[in-house]
Length: 118
Image (cartoon, rainbow, N blue to C red; front, side, top):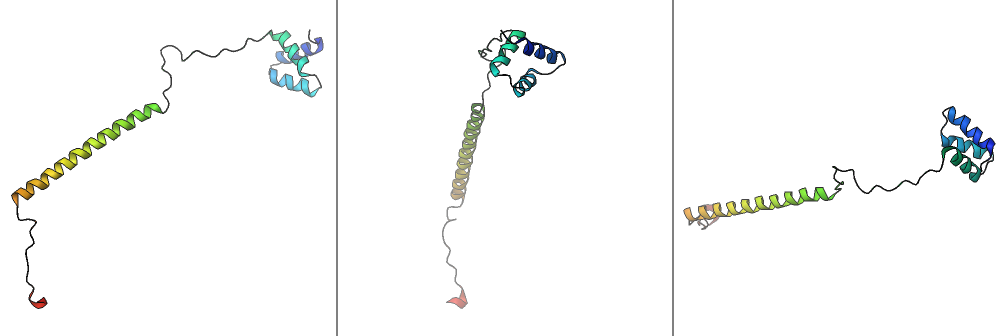
């Protein structure tokens, strides 16, 4: 059983619109023990049930994916990059081969005589 004077004080302050934490702080400053304050608050408000942990997100909502969602996009981007790189190199090699077929002597060195260096 809580001290009636504390209970009356809490009720009066709550009617004024003061928050419970402010009331508790005021009572502590006046020398009341935490046990006395808690007992009076529980007598006025009733026992408070323990909050339970939610089982998961509300129905219809997906759980947050976090960083894993971004990794999927990164992997797709890398795959596309390497495919485009492969295609570019394939086309470049074929173009070089086509030019070498059209100009078979393109890589040969042609000797040039420079009169004043001989």
